[in-house]
Length: 333
Ligand code: ADP
Ligand code: MG
Image 1 (cartoon, rainbow, N blue to C red):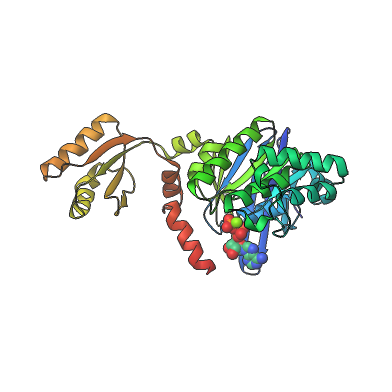
Image 2: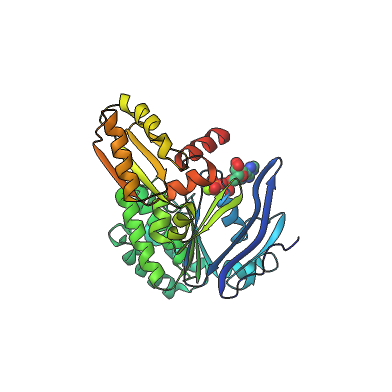
């Protein structure tokens, strides 16, 4: 076991240095460093297969890394895993809800496991059912719950013992937009209460909405880190975005705008949207519109915008986030 990289930052609720994990030929983690200052939210953002779950499993003591070190809530993950487990909550991609128990029974059972005592366990279960808007369903078995309700119950379970550090692995994957928004609101409230949170996500929007800091990982490596704003600045420049009226104009627009592009032009065929990284601001937009007009293209929509986190992915990996996710899915299929 070797320690590499810079020294751990003090005041970190979570700190990892040089985490490496291999599965045979697959290097799931190739040297991950990260810090989560106390009371903040870190989003570990990456496509399917990037190494997010592996990182969470190492930090929550469920998996021993081949190399590297980590501390959580001030405790060394490898030296004292039991003590780490006492100080964390974990809510996973694969929910730890017992389908055959009611919502109340699920939470009450977790309280007993944490030795809260009979009275306190029941109280805590009711508190959480109330907070997570599950009181009406408290006495129904969990298998009758919707996907969103199950996630909320699973998250409530992770909060029974009021852990100072919480890990959430893809808390909203597979949820419909409304349940996702509900979850975001709950998480925002929870974080305002002072909980340190490390969450993983494939959604750029989720990282932007919830996290103070973002660590972008791909193929087990950190490829960028910073606030959403910092990442956008890192990618630099502005984008001219035009939406053309008919499919045939997409190719023409790409050809015509190539001379003004300072980076790769992005094309969303279905939306007939062409996005061009440019060096100037408004003058670049005016220039682009004039060039299009010369060949008879009048866009349905045109504008100038700052880079999005999707652009961060495109710039860092040469591929949009969605395409990366698809590619990994094929690999893992
Ligand atoms: P993510 O959570 O970002 O989707 P994971 O951490 O689950 O990614 O996986 C990272 C890589 O490690 C992937 O290539 C995955 O296929 C591989 N992997 C994960 N767990 C195992 C395992 N138990 N055995 C073999 N390969 C694994
Ligand atoms: Mg995962």
